[in-house]
Amino acid sequence: ECLPEICTLDCGTMNFAEADYVMTNTPGMLTAMGRMMTELGVKPEIEAFDTGHLWYAKQLVKDGVLGSPALVQLCMGVPWGAPDDLNTFMAMVNNVPDDWTFSAFGLGRHQMAYVAASVLAGGNVRVGLEDNLWLDKGVLAENWQLVERAGTIIENMGARVIGPAQVREQLGLTKRAAA
Image (spheres, one colour):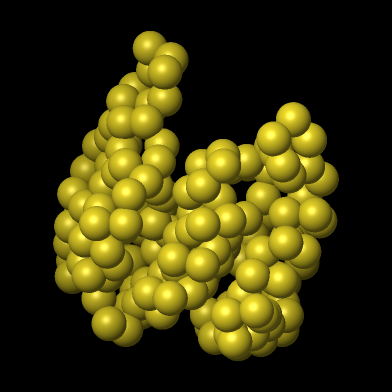
């Protein structure tokens, strides 16, 4: 009923963080959710927590469940997914099809390092309180502060920050109101 422009699709099952919790996304569940998003005209934001998740996302596109070019978020440093090191990150980047759009993030204190790494690798950036609560050691952040800091890093690297209208155009999104 809300008809969002984008909806997250975590493309695999994995043990999650330090809790005794398994995030369950079976192939059947992912196919059903992906078809629902596609039929509703909602762009899936594929979250890949490891290379196997990218492998399955590519299969969903090949099977016609998801459209191409796809949008993928490389999720780094989430225990027990892809560790937050540059070798693993580049393995993830190198498994993203050339016509897809990717962003990346790292948890906690590595969030801003992944702003730079993602830009250097040709991708986009994700920051915010979902992934990091701290502006500096012992200083709680507000979301706008994280966005501002990321923008400064991006611009200091010679890249540019774009606004919502340009993002919608690049991703082929249409702003719409809830039903």
